[in-house]
Length: 138
Image 1 (spheres, helix red, strand yellow):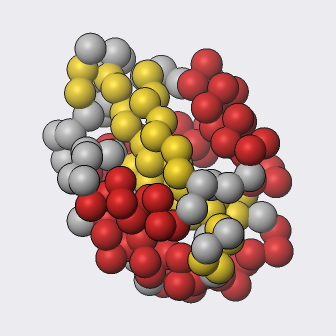
Image 2: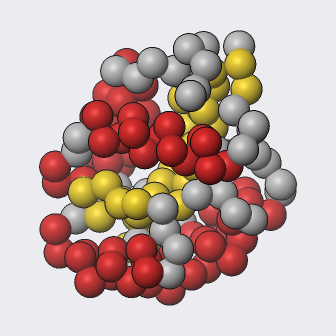
Image 3: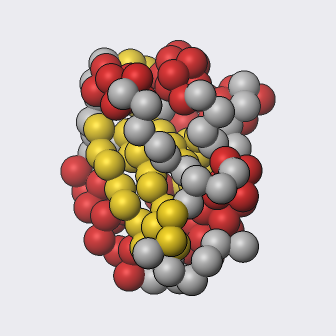
């Protein structure tokens, strides 16, 4: 269980400004915990952030970025994630790539076309539980 005043750190790897805004503004208002979202728009940026050794409880990953496309994006992030759970952000057209990522170790996926706040909370809870005692309390 996530403590009521927990801080959950998320690395959001997404190049679409509208989807970034949705994650940064809408979802934090509806969650029983605080989110600290770090954003990268390119795979190369995300790899650099992960190599710095910063602690994250979850990675939200769009598979289609300006510098990487599809399942290889997942593989590249997984290689640098150090066991941090990865949740794939997908659109309806990405289902084959999502299936490959799930088979390759992604924790779950969120369909960006039909975002479900309850599913997002469940995914966050499970990811924090899976990543161990990293969530900080304020």
